[in-house]
Length: 153
Image 1 (spheres, rainbow, N blue to C red):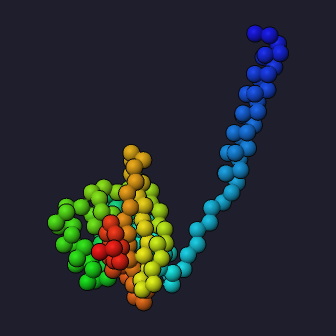
Image 2 (cartoon, rainbow, N blue to C red):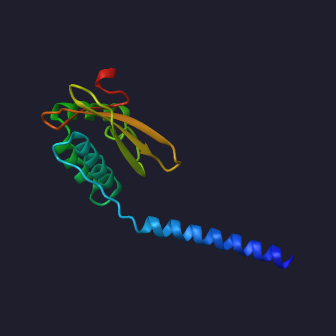
Image 3 (cartoon, rainbow, N blue to C red):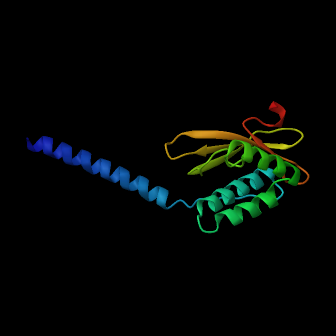
């Protein structure tokens, strides 16, 4: 290998190393911010799913906390329907699955009469599924979870 080739290769390696270092440093130096409001239903839905998935991921105390979260965030009438769905389908009705996702994302789906959000779950195989969650604007309680929203029944 000639000295010119070695110099070009070394310069290329240095440029890549500096570029990667700058990228890692920039992302490490940028703090993330999450904000919300208890009066905002999208925030409430995101809070519920974040806490619920955390609870379901904890083998020691998760089921007790998940039950309490359901009682707080889900309308009692709908909770009965959700429990019936779970008994029939042998799956978690909040997640519409038998296991817990690795990631979740909440997206406002916009409706006039109630708040509707699409929840995207990412699973271990990098596959994803979606559920639609509807929340009463006045009571701030979840009134429906399914593959389509209340308007799509």
